[in-house]
Image 1 (tube, helix red, strand yellow):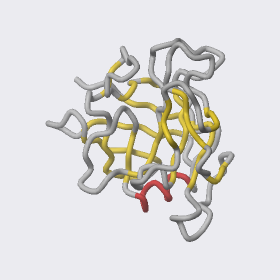
Image 2 (cartoon, one colour):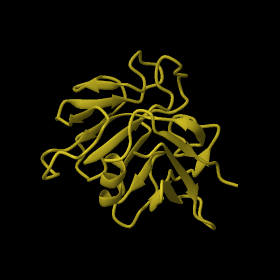
Image 3 (spheres, helix red, strand yellow):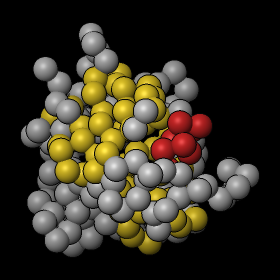
Image 4 (spheres, one colour):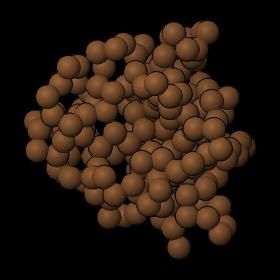
Length: 178
């Protein structure tokens, strides 16, 4: 099991990173705003933090042939799954059922991003601060590794490798950019 995961930016890049876990190194990509210790909703930055932890995972059974190996609570995504990203709503930064009237993410996306998605505890209740960012996940990268909206994205084979080796005790550190 990976006790600690670190995400560092690649030299010369604001968004490209290296995810280190045990002896493993994987290319990853962060938010279009780089990393920030002042994360705000919709700023496109990945929160730079030393004590994030994975709390659960989602997967698309209609897209992945087998249930991923994962020690986290793992839930199949359905068409009714969403995630509230409206800072003024009581369900801010929590899973919700669709249809949902406030601003939200749809978990069953048309692209591959949430085919496997690890939820990180950034700005989660009970210490949630409205407007500090929501839906911070570790998920599948788009082809060509474009920046995310604030998450950490890896190639699917690398994310499957990580998911099989993390637990609720894994500490995730995202280092801020220089």
